[in-house]
Image 1: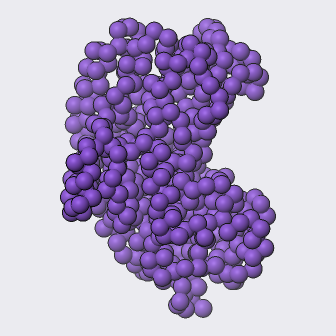
Image 2: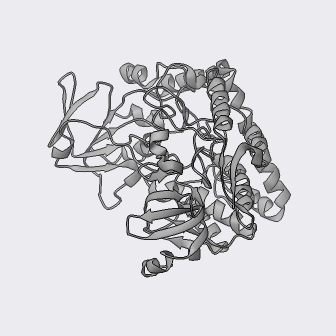
Image 3: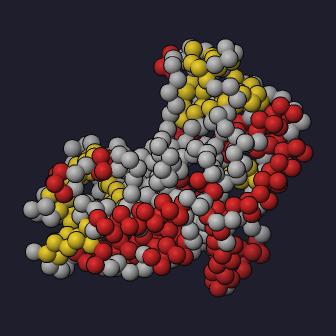
Length: 495
């Protein structure tokens, strides 16, 4: 569909509207097709598909989950080039899936959703985009992910800087960093991938670190030609390899949720590699975190410590005070002249569905309901918001396995919910308040015994300290919990 078709969307009632064309939205669309539900559209704010793998194109962008597991189980790819896929190959895989299932005819590009309101009388959602398009739908599925809105720090004088500025999630490939004095603000998952790629070409790299990251080796390598031939010729071998990866990763859940002392093995490994690689004792001391390993995201890289060891990289741990037209000034008064600032400051991970304005029954606004931290029954449904299904919602993020496994569990659950409404006398359903409350209490109780409750701040938590992001258990337990949608969990309105 092209934007000239806007008027055609202003009157027909569509069975399902999906927001977002990344792994979640496209996978949901494929499952709707397989279930025989063809009346759906995908509203995508950008001009192409791919979500985070479209947006994050910085040098070295790659996945930290093995390729065979970071793909749909129902759409295997036997010819992955390496154990951990890089951004171009993952994005190409997403494109291939969309083409195979003819999803582009359902996608409305450059249609960023501004608001969605549920009309109880008509039992339908009114979805409005920033382009002025209005869409009416029986069911609304959000697939915006947790890592789609870049987070920018707030420093005095930011707007006065006269050099080049961009966020790592919005990398400017037209700008040549060669010979520049570059400041990188942040040492998280993105920085550990792109800093080693750019440090050799820049004149100076000032790396501003608020807190260090635990970085362990990445067991990555290209697949051999023979391995790829075996995967292609023997589908069972491909599936067995995927299963082995899954269960190996799944076993790590115990370390994160109950037996955090196991993670000390990786802590000692990181410390040993840092001591062996980094010659400057001050750098070596500052790059190693002072918080328990696993409390924040554990990162994987084979060239991070080598990059830190370079003479042209200056690791700065003093907080930034303000920014001047050509420099960054830290709170100890030190001035750092820079030509370019790259913000590697992550995403607004706890701001689920923002900045969209979602309004449910009796005028309830989701942003207000979630003011103290997002909650959803099984991470998918919210009381008072009928026929709304959230993919990769609150407390469904993982630290040990593939989020696509969680998404596929949600696909099955959401399809059942949509089928319960379409073609029946049920006008709408929304989860009972007591079911949601009980679920949320259990989740928070389980999180109390996890490594994420060890006292450090992270993007897993809100400013008040509530962990709204992580799933505190095995992924197979989540698969079991979402296997069947029980209508007794829901308030059902029939008409």
